[in-house]
Amino acid sequence: MLTKKQWEFCLDEIGKMFPDAHCELVHSNPFELLVATLLSAQCTDVLVNRVTADLFQKYKKPEDYLAVDIEELQTDIRSIGLYRNKAKNIQALSALLIEEFGGEVPADRDLLTTFPGVGRKTANVVVSNAFGIPAMAVDTHVERVAKRLGMNRWKDSPLMVEEKIMRWTLRERWTDTHHQIIFFGRYHCKAQNPACGECPLLPLCREGKKRMKHVG
Image 1: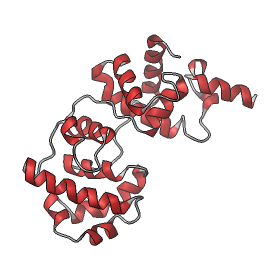
Image 2 (image 1 turned 180 degrees about the horizontal axis):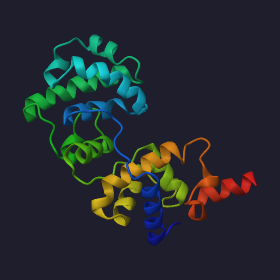
Image 3 (image 1 turned 90 degrees about the vertical axis):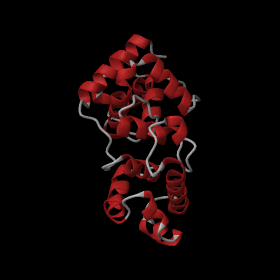
Image 4 (image 1 turned 90 degrees about the horizontal axis):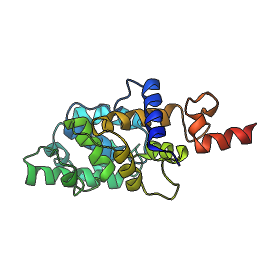
C-alpha cells in the first residue's frame, strides 16, 4: 500500500502531466452540468457532448423538459445508454427543482443526492465545477487509478476511495486532483493497455510493476 508521502508524490507527478485537466462535459450553467453529468453515467463524455449540443439548444430550463412527453425526451437522448431511465430522472428532478428550489440547482451535495438519478459522484461533480466547492468525485477512472497504485484495496468501495483520497489530499486540491486523476486514467493509465513503460509512477505502482514483470 502507498504511504501518504508516496501519494503526494503521485499527485505532484500527475499534476505535471495534466496541469490543465478540467471537466470535459460542455455546459454553461449548473443545471446543464447536472443534466450532462446524469447523462454521463456509463457513457463517455464525448457522446454526452454530442447529444447535449442539440439538447441544450432545445431545453434551456427545467420547465422545458416538463413541456414535452417523456417519449420525445427519450428520442432526444436515445443514443445514450439507459436513455429511458435517464429521461425519467431528468423530468423528475426538473419537477423537484421547480417545486422546491425555484428552478435553481442547490449548491449542496447532500441535497443533490436526494434528487432522482443523482448519486454522490454526480453531486460532487456539480458542486465542485458549478459552485467552486472543493469535492472529490470518484468515477471509474479515479477508482481504477487509486486501486492500481495501491492507494486502496481492490475490494474497497468508491466511497472508501473518496474518503481516503480526501484524508490524504489537501482540501484545496480536491477538485484539481479529481480532474487530473481522471485525465491520467482516461489518457495514460487506461483500462486497457495502460502506458506503464513510460509512467513516472511505475516505481510506486503495485499493478504497473506486476504488468511490466509479466511483459518482460
